[in-house]
Length: 119
Image (cartoon, rainbow, N blue to C red; front, side):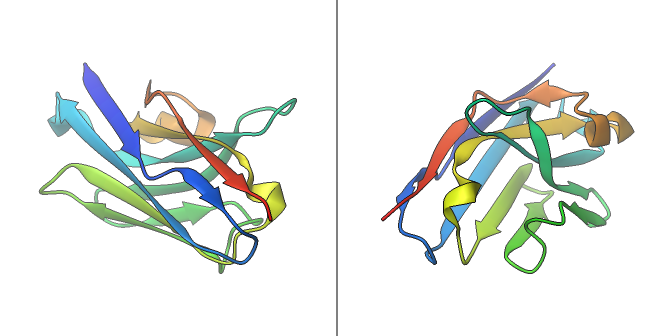
Protein backbone atom coordinates (compact mmCIF):
# COMPACT_ATOMS: atom_id res chain seq x y z
CA UNK A 1 0.00 0.00 0.00
CA UNK A 2 1.08 3.56 -0.71
CA UNK A 3 0.23 6.54 1.45
CA UNK A 4 0.10 10.02 -0.07
CA UNK A 5 0.25 13.29 1.84
CA UNK A 6 -0.46 16.54 0.01
CA UNK A 7 0.42 20.06 1.05
CA UNK A 8 0.57 23.56 -0.38
CA UNK A 9 -3.04 24.48 -1.04
CA UNK A 10 -4.56 27.76 -0.03
CA UNK A 11 -6.11 31.02 -1.13
CA UNK A 12 -4.50 33.00 -3.92
CA UNK A 13 -5.52 35.94 -6.07
CA UNK A 14 -6.11 35.54 -9.80
CA UNK A 15 -2.80 35.64 -11.63
CA UNK A 16 -0.96 34.34 -8.60
CA UNK A 17 1.02 31.15 -8.05
CA UNK A 18 0.97 28.15 -5.75
CA UNK A 19 3.04 25.00 -5.48
CA UNK A 20 1.48 21.74 -4.37
CA UNK A 21 3.54 18.86 -3.00
CA UNK A 22 2.68 15.21 -2.56
CA UNK A 23 4.93 12.83 -0.66
CA UNK A 24 4.52 9.08 -1.03
CA UNK A 25 5.44 6.46 1.55
CA UNK A 26 4.99 2.72 1.86
CA UNK A 27 5.45 0.42 -1.15
CA UNK A 28 6.82 3.19 -3.32
CA UNK A 29 8.82 0.84 -5.54
CA UNK A 30 5.55 0.00 -7.28
CA UNK A 31 4.91 3.58 -8.35
CA UNK A 32 5.06 4.13 -12.11
CA UNK A 33 3.30 7.46 -12.25
CA UNK A 34 2.27 10.22 -9.89
CA UNK A 35 0.17 13.25 -10.50
CA UNK A 36 -2.80 15.41 -9.75
CA UNK A 37 -6.50 15.43 -10.33
CA UNK A 38 -8.92 18.12 -9.22
CA UNK A 39 -12.58 18.34 -8.40
CA UNK A 40 -14.55 21.56 -8.37
CA UNK A 41 -17.92 21.83 -6.60
CA UNK A 42 -20.62 20.10 -8.62
CA UNK A 43 -18.16 18.75 -11.17
CA UNK A 44 -16.47 15.46 -11.83
CA UNK A 45 -12.90 14.83 -10.84
CA UNK A 46 -10.60 15.61 -13.75
CA UNK A 47 -7.00 14.95 -14.65
CA UNK A 48 -4.66 17.91 -14.20
CA UNK A 49 -1.19 16.49 -14.76
CA UNK A 50 0.75 13.23 -14.52
CA UNK A 51 4.42 12.35 -14.57
CA UNK A 52 6.02 8.94 -14.93
CA UNK A 53 9.22 7.77 -13.24
CA UNK A 54 11.00 8.54 -16.53
CA UNK A 55 9.67 12.12 -16.40
CA UNK A 56 7.18 11.73 -19.22
CA UNK A 57 4.38 14.23 -18.59
CA UNK A 58 0.71 14.63 -19.43
CA UNK A 59 -1.29 17.82 -18.94
CA UNK A 60 -4.90 18.80 -19.27
CA UNK A 61 -5.38 21.32 -22.07
CA UNK A 62 -6.77 23.81 -19.58
CA UNK A 63 -3.50 24.02 -17.65
CA UNK A 64 -0.89 23.67 -20.40
CA UNK A 65 1.57 26.53 -20.31
CA UNK A 66 0.52 27.52 -16.78
CA UNK A 67 1.16 24.44 -14.64
CA UNK A 68 4.35 22.40 -14.39
CA UNK A 69 4.60 18.96 -12.82
CA UNK A 70 7.89 17.60 -11.56
CA UNK A 71 9.03 14.62 -9.55
CA UNK A 72 11.85 13.83 -7.16
CA UNK A 73 12.18 10.05 -7.35
CA UNK A 74 14.67 9.95 -4.47
CA UNK A 75 12.13 11.63 -2.20
CA UNK A 76 9.08 9.94 -3.76
CA UNK A 77 7.56 13.38 -4.07
CA UNK A 78 5.67 15.06 -6.88
CA UNK A 79 5.21 18.80 -7.24
CA UNK A 80 2.72 20.92 -9.14
CA UNK A 81 3.81 24.48 -9.82
CA UNK A 82 0.72 26.49 -10.70
CA UNK A 83 1.16 29.91 -12.28
CA UNK A 84 -1.26 32.44 -13.73
CA UNK A 85 -4.03 30.95 -11.65
CA UNK A 86 -7.63 31.60 -12.66
CA UNK A 87 -10.85 31.42 -10.64
CA UNK A 88 -11.78 28.31 -12.62
CA UNK A 89 -8.74 26.56 -11.13
CA UNK A 90 -10.55 26.59 -7.79
CA UNK A 91 -10.97 22.98 -6.70
CA UNK A 92 -9.82 20.31 -4.32
CA UNK A 93 -6.59 18.90 -5.74
CA UNK A 94 -5.93 15.21 -5.21
CA UNK A 95 -2.63 13.44 -5.57
CA UNK A 96 -2.60 10.04 -7.25
CA UNK A 97 0.04 7.36 -7.63
CA UNK A 98 0.01 4.03 -9.40
CA UNK A 99 0.54 2.36 -12.74
CA UNK A 100 -0.65 3.19 -16.22
CA UNK A 101 -4.18 3.27 -14.84
CA UNK A 102 -3.52 6.65 -13.27
CA UNK A 103 -4.55 8.20 -16.59
CA UNK A 104 -8.03 6.81 -15.88
CA UNK A 105 -8.08 7.71 -12.21
CA UNK A 106 -6.99 4.29 -10.99
CA UNK A 107 -4.49 4.20 -8.15
CA UNK A 108 -3.84 5.36 -4.63
CA UNK A 109 -5.27 8.74 -3.61
CA UNK A 110 -4.30 11.42 -1.16
CA UNK A 111 -6.80 13.21 1.02
CA UNK A 112 -6.89 16.33 -1.14
CA UNK A 113 -5.86 19.92 -0.66
CA UNK A 114 -8.08 22.93 -1.33
CA UNK A 115 -7.05 25.62 -3.80
CA UNK A 116 -9.14 28.77 -3.96
CA UNK A 117 -8.45 31.42 -6.57
CA UNK A 118 -10.32 34.57 -5.70
CA UNK A 119 -9.85 38.28 -5.29
